[in-house]
Length: 529
Image (cartoon, rainbow, N blue to C red; front, side, top):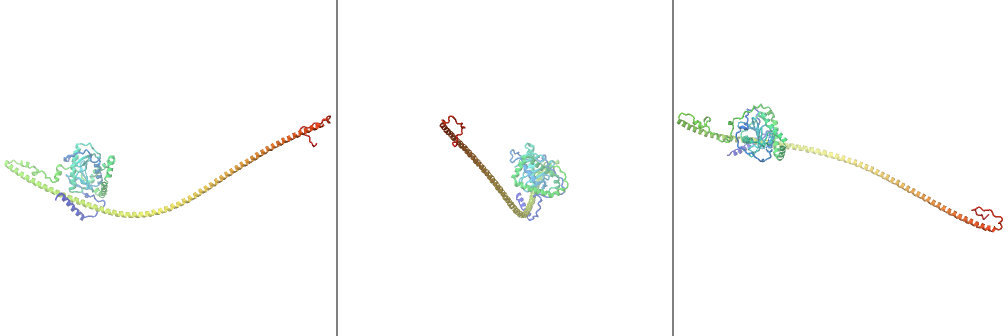
């Protein structure tokens, strides 16, 4: 049976056992999926992880000249993952290379591993399913990787630092190599509870670095713009991170008394000597180097003693045989130890997966119960809302009816006012029309009077003219009569003169001695006299 088959069998068995022994669902503030309860006892002195200068040489890596992703893609992913973990303590720790790195695992399978060094924290960030970290951060720089290659270096604030040299490239290779081993240990090695005292003493280093990134993200327009666009493109991932963050914040509030009551943590010890560190190849079952008695090589044992050449040769041959036997025994022991370690890893993986499966099932049950409670609450709330809506509708209908009645009354009042205004306006118009007619009548009367006056004046003028003409005619007639009378008088005078002359002639002879008295002129003699 292969190692993979062992894992699958153990995982399947653990799932069956977990299904048969389900516990009651925890509260909303339940622990994260991979979290072990914090150890409340006083912790032993913790060894510091070796700094970069003391890490073993690593296979060289290449530097990518053309980025596959935008410059801020890698560090923004690390920031989002750290933000999802919030200020929660580590889920567990493992014993690796003489130190106990802290491990966080998200519900989506992403990991963060943190080592304590004498210079500060060193953090490794992993995507779900990846063995290599996509970013490693120390106190000075952050190193981004893609497919085992170095793609970017950032300064301590998260800004790209393109002008790095060969020394940082070598450190990046060491970090990548160690990050691969840490990830393997975080998954396969025996999990241990982290100490509450250690977290209280050293959590600020992890949180302050995350806060520094957050401040730079908000103050850096280029990073902020990428983050906003990244959030829009990765909405399901962001929603999962938000749910993770909310759960961990609630969990932190629940265990805050445990952290506050933890005893003081001892200071870090120096990093263990290089001889005490595990080799990754030996972890995979490779045999250790051969050794003689008391750890000395077989050649040195063959040279011990100088009693005689034969005795020395015999002793040397015996020692060689003993060394070969011990070497074979050591190889067998190494193989047995490797098999035991593999079996322990299988059991640890099975236990870890069993705990993860149980926690997942518990969380699923919690989510189901929460969903059922939420649905019940939603139905209750919906019913209450429906009642409120019905009451509100009734009130609204009554209000609408009242408003309609008020509007109808207002319309009636407005209509009555409009009718009164119209009647008043019509009355004003009638009065104005009557006034206009009266004015027109007065004008007509005035015009008629004027015309009558004009006609009367014309009649008077005509009468005066007629009178004048009559007077003229009378005067003319009088003149004519006077002329006619004068003519008659002249004729009469002339006739009288003729008559007088005739009479005088007749009486001239007898009366020649006595002439007659003169007659006044113009008065003819009255024939009657």
